[in-house]
Image 1 (cartoon, one colour):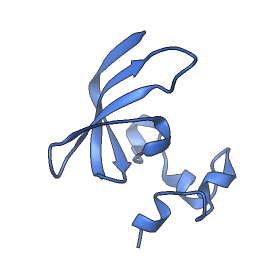
Image 2: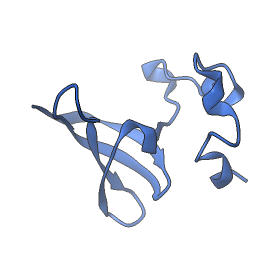
Image 3: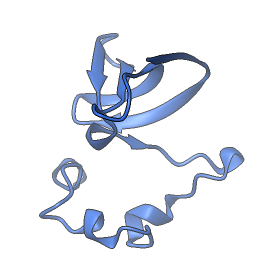
Image 4: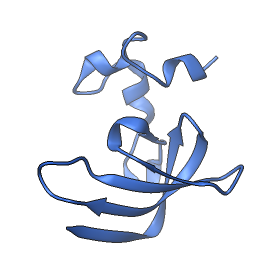
Length: 90
């Protein structure tokens, strides 16, 4: 098991709202890595897997907004029927 508390905030978008990754727990190759995310609006803490959130763009870290425009390596994730975040963006 590996546990990591993030020193620098990584801003993410989740189905529960925007938040920050606070903590990560990796139990090994046979289970998904869990991320503890603090939701900005409510202060709630939720544990989610990597499938449940998206990292917001951050130019200073080299994270660009291109993945939302269909330029990700896995183009299937940007299809509305496969993207759980697509319905939240109006």
